[in-house]
Length: 293
Ligand SMILES: NC(=O)C1=CN([C@@H]2O[C@H](COP(=O)(O)OP(=O)(O)OC[C@H]3O[C@@H](n4cnc5c(N)ncnc54)[C@H](OP(=O)(O)O)[C@@H]3O)[C@@H](O)[C@H]2O)C=CC1
Ligand SMILES: O=C(O)[C@@H]1CCC=N1
Image 1: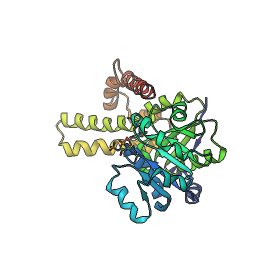
Image 2: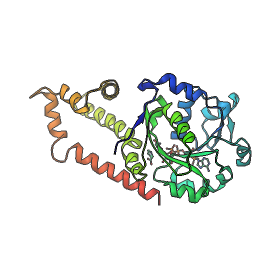
Image 3: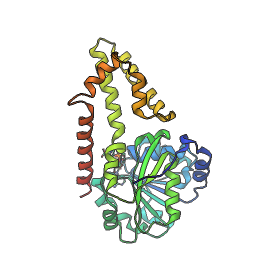
Image 4: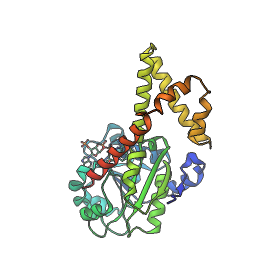
């Protein structure tokens, strides 16, 4: 199955995406302004979304978010007051485990003009309907934290009530912070979660491991971390800018009989990185499935 993508603005569509985002004139509600909710909100604000269009419900909102109240952001309004604004989008960004408590009280917001955009790992569209009501127009999406710097990737799946306008709106919001793709087979979202949703953590851990390996070879900790960080971010930038497959970029580093080949013999050997990554991704996928139950 092929998934077509709307490229984020760093993919070369900045003007179009910015126009779409700036023309976003109806209220947006963020429920849960933690790490991922804030990452998306920051990305949208950076793209020109007016704080005066935003309501945030989170009793533990950060000082950064509460500070936006001075710019017109509405902080912890009642659900009744939010209903009066007829929001275009309610972004659901609390932990999956909190959804059974949080969603029923938002049922008052269910109406055809309001899209519920859930980013909770594992929580299926059928569960969203159970908790919000059968009339809820809902999209289940899986973004990732690079959205905070405009370089995220989100895969989304819509329920049957979502209109083409609501799909386009979701597309424009998510494309403002990275690339966006849609799948029809919702089960794929759990696999997406295991790869791109959780994936940034694997990459950051790789940096930690690379730095630790440098220390083991006698490098100063600060230098080891600088080398690891710059190497991963520079390699990421190459993946971003260049068309070549990752395997070709890898081969370009690997001189026959050289140092890289010696290291790759270990990483690509039996019990190396590939089977480890498969096991890790499988564990994440299975955890997503369990969270959805
Ligand atoms: N972090 C990530 O990289 C990604 C996360 N996700 C999904 O995003 C969601 C949020 O994850 P993440 O941002 O990491 O989690 P966080 O814990 O950082 O954020 C959740 C926020 O919701 C708040 N909250 C708790 N109860 C309520 C409530 N009743 N009403 C409003 N807000 C409430 C929490 O406050 P308190 O801390 O006080 O409980 C917290 O600030 C999850 O469903 C996760 O699966 C998806 C993709 C990537
Ligand atoms: O760890 C989690 O459950 C969330 C979902 C994807 C990334 N963070």
